[in-house]
Length: 199
Ligand code: SF4
Image 1 (cartoon, rainbow, N blue to C red):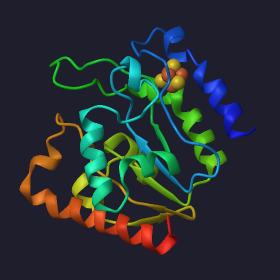
Image 2: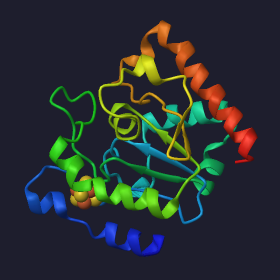
Image 3: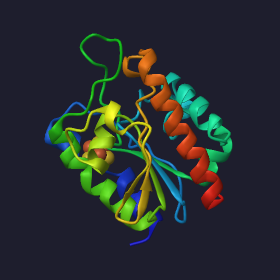
Image 4: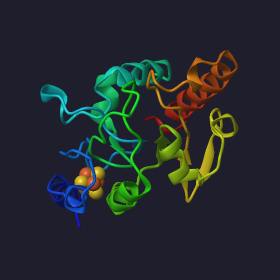
């Protein structure tokens, strides 16, 4: 299967709706075949007209792109060169407190997992950036604490994996001063990989 065929099938996916889960489509992802880097988030934010097809287009995205700019990629360049997707591709709704988006459930993640497997297989990126705990668990295994993995560079199944914390304002991890050097180290790894691989 080619990437555009996979994406056409993915755009039609209604598995969660059919299974009675709260997730609201449409699926959000961007990028094309040949992308050498894949960023994998948790789930898209609220669907809102103009930016519906753009992963990380809200306030969390602004912060994420500030980080990526520190590593050397302006937002437009990053979006045009690389693949952006997530663990679940549809907006999961807001959480009970109303301060952020609901994390997708295990069942929803499971329903969506083979889409991500297919994306990774077909795109075959040299570098993967998992963003946030759920994406990090997918690539590094569950039960890893953010403080133990952020700021490190991994080699997994022939790919470079550099985990990043979730940039959402509802995520408290980045607010702790002791975690800032870990994030800075992660961005330094990113800048190094960008140079090494001429990404
Ligand atoms: S979250 Fe994934 S599995 Fe669920 S409807 Fe969206 S694309 Fe399909």
